[in-house]
Length: 319
Image (cartoon, rainbow, N blue to C red; front, side, top):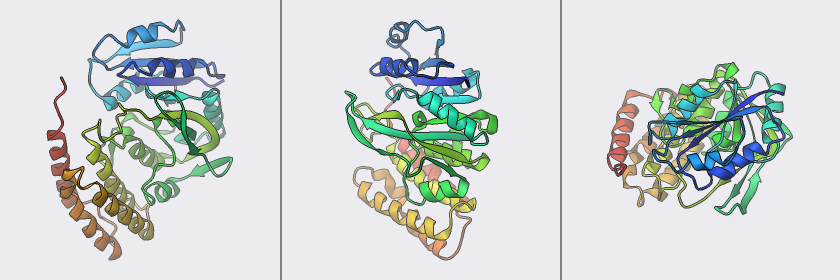
């Protein structure tokens, strides 16, 4: 069997026990499980200590460093090339590690492999079971991934909990910290997928491998995450980056621009900071229609930096 490093960047105890239990229930027994506690408190350790398994290792950060830094620390702690992140509110399906590891062995040049996932609520009830592939297996190179993901402004792969990363193919921690030189804040998973695909293709298997949990304290919720506006605008960054990088063609870029322009309008009242970014969409459309491709330029960088600064300045300070 192939050894997998399962990494849980944890900061809340609510669902952590279920996440750990789902790893220990795998048919694939050859793994290490590292739980990194970023809570800054003492509520998580008792949850971990309930499980007496020598494959579990508990580490801590300095506390409240944030998800990206916690993921980076775990990346450095992992001993094996195959890396499986699992967020502390998600769960793995039985045999997910084995199925993903088998796909990684069948696609040894893939930067990452992924499968289908369910969406469940706080009580574990299934809300949606539609995130499945249309074929038993698929393979996506950089252009195919950009067309499917950025062209439609959608993430068909899922979250980090849904993928198995193969570090042997050149994938680095920096790939989920930044995209085209821009620091990632919210849609970190999409930024990683697009960046990793520049290094090597990805592969998918039509097997249900995990469950993504929706609940009131979810970090991807606009009510919980004050940086949500940045996440919406990161899609504009992806459009510009993939078009400039040659992975997105003109028609797909125009389709994506129109979808994002509609999203900006729909969210404008709830997210007033979007007013700084909205004018750039019309300008981007004109440039793409005119045949331009070098649209990730200093003017966008200046607008982006000012927008991010505005959003982050409005965030409440941690208590």
